[in-house]
Image 1 (tube, rainbow, N blue to C red):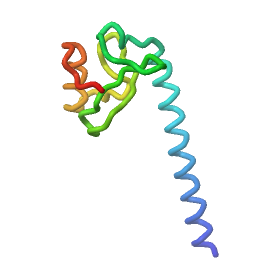
Image 2 (image 1 turned 30 degrees about the vertical axis):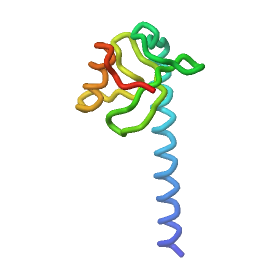
Image 3 (image 1 turned 120 degrees about the horizontal axis):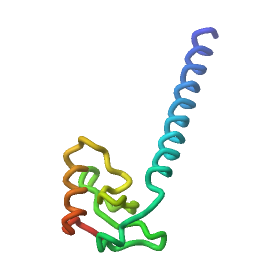
Length: 97
């Protein structure tokens, strides 16, 4: 019973850690992406004024806020697909839906 209990406690601790990280990330993104500038880049938007773009990294349709630098909220610095997407938003040639 001791090993099983340790394994369950460890699994629950990892789960709590992931939830904490997810909440922390959401809080940070909420602060960083307070203003949405999608309309300044002439991007089609949804009812919540988020840009409707096609993510290069994950090859999927996304709704994302866009900051003043043309970076979608899902942008990850240093990732080549994300860097290219941000450049395309700024140049007005990003794939949308």
